[in-house]
Amino acid sequence: MKTKLHPTQNNLGEKTRRAVIELLNQNLADVLDLGLQAKQAHWNVKGPHFIGLHELFDKVAEEVEGFTDDIAERAVELGGVALGTAPIISKQSRLAAYPLDLVSGKEHVTALSRALAKFGASARAAIDAAAKLSDADTADLFTEVSRGVDKLLWMVEAHLHAKD
Ligand SMILES: [Fe+2]
Image (tube, rainbow, N blue to C red):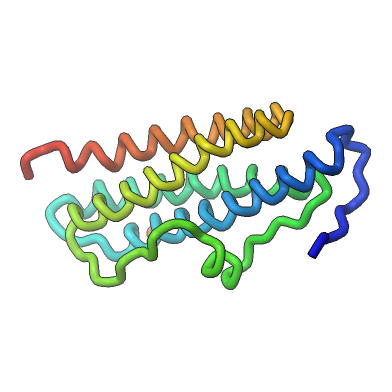
């Protein structure tokens, strides 16, 4: 079904805007899921590294929320509708479901690293997809998101590289 775009004086062509809105909404479902997964880790982690990981996972959730807003608002800027409700996240997210039985820091670090890496890869792919659609601004947006996610992945993943 071809949805109607909201009118805008933005001079990107309608065909480009439609394709980019779709790209943005797919990544919106993924990034919303990622933010919820970071909160799930923040709430449930236990063990000797509790406080550091509890705070780090919250920082991940906060930064991811910033990316989420940028992605959603760009879809609307281009005349689209940002699709960010719970049923859509659950239907569209390409991230693996976050396991509900994790306890230790290592388990949560492993699961959240996997989610960050998966979303990081899709944000990186979206840079090229947006560039191919001749939308340099969305490519730039995803470049910023991708760089930020790489940094978060480093901060989370670093916990797996020590002996304890
Ligand atoms: Fe909290």
